[in-house]
Amino acid sequence: MSRLIDNIKSYFAKKESNDQTENAPIGMCPICWGHNEWDGQYYEVIKDKHSIPGKDIYESFISKIADEHVNTSHQHEDKYICTTCDKEI
Image (cartoon, rainbow, N blue to C red; front, side, top):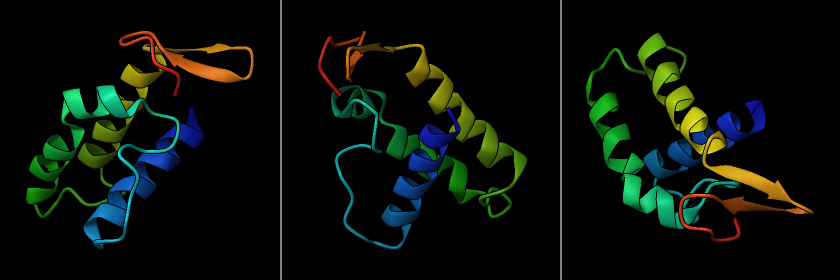
């Protein structure tokens, strides 16, 4: 789970610095990521100047994403399947 959290943090860090990103953080379903609109929710959290990486509200937001993703994916052989949309991640 810590790897997934790191991937989410890295994704948002790249987005903030206008670096090229994939459609979703590594290991997350791009289809469900878009439907959940985590990018928009992230910018709502970040608008508050006190919500910077390492602060409680930021960490809670990242943990929420990771928790929800872990509950909606499962491993099948050597690949992960999204249980929400049944796509390979």
